[in-house]
Image 1 (cartoon, rainbow, N blue to C red):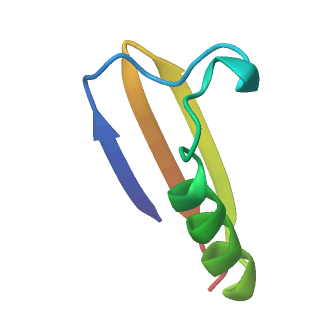
Image 2 (tube, rainbow, N blue to C red):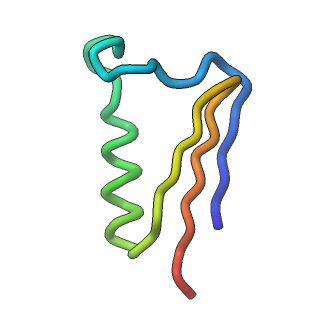
Length: 56
């Protein structure tokens, strides 16, 4: 399992709140996790937690 977390503002509540150009990193991480048959979970609130679980 790979976990990355910060204590920033988190993600916007709705995709239309995101500034243009944001989201490319998320799409890249999703694609790489999928290639490795991993499961990506993001939790937003007081910060952002991104967790990728890989099969053994």
